[in-house]
Image 1 (cartoon, rainbow, N blue to C red):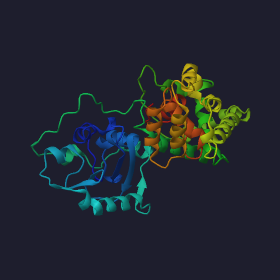
Image 2 (cartoon, rainbow, N blue to C red; image 1 turned 120 degrees about the vertical axis):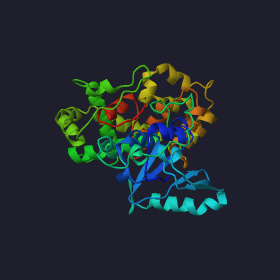
Image 3 (tube, one colour; image 1 turned 90 degrees about the vertical axis):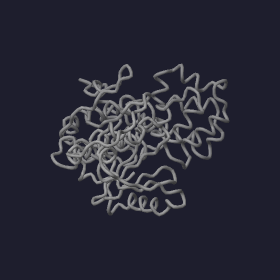
Length: 374
């Protein structure tokens, strides 16, 4: 979607038939962040958690793309546009849509004119004075149409254990990792995510365990902590963490598990996978060790035939399709292999691309002010 002005979460959920609960949607929002008022903050949060956002200063186009069809319209993604204004749009068929899709993609990928929207950028909007207010722009206009009802089975939050917020998680983790590297002077590049994961473990298990308060409990995902300055928050933990890190409390075993997994599941060797070597892989996953019965079930031939395991893990680790689609496919095909296992496996295999994701890392990100589910 391209829309310079973004309305309330409730309105957008109704207009778009609640996209936050649709696992197969790949959401991309192009907007002008400078024009967004604070009433857009909750919706931008959900877009961030469920997909990707880029900002294009001076954007005025309103384009809604679904698969190969496009609606080009005068209507912004706001309640005012869809309930009070006289708007017009045209639905283009797939052949007619090619130019509009190409224009959207060219803007999206042009890093000279668009910038990725970070979690901290969205957080700043919550207290913004000014910006586009949907209520303000519609003042004096009479309601003429009603928005559809929100589906009963859907909520307006993505705080679930599915993969709808995976891209938002990656973006949040990258922002934290970059801030940590700048403050700590870490020399790691390939294993920077391992070092940040060690920090999050430290905050969850050592001393006052400050991030434990933000752990998901009884199915409830806590709201993120309010953080004024991320750099200062990192600084206050660096001395204690560096002392703890010198005692080799985390980096060596993470690197060893990376070595084991990349050896067993490498392209040349994955076709020769056996249940014994599969067990070695499962032993490297924290989530599998937390529920040992699931590890035994996962490695049981009666539950998962070896051909299915090889095909699924090959696609997950070496496939070229969308990462979220590959995660969902592996989880749907393999019994007792959940989302945590899939995400953790990718993190150990590609530490320079994917962070390790588990309950500790989710809690740690919320402690640093990032709005993540899981």
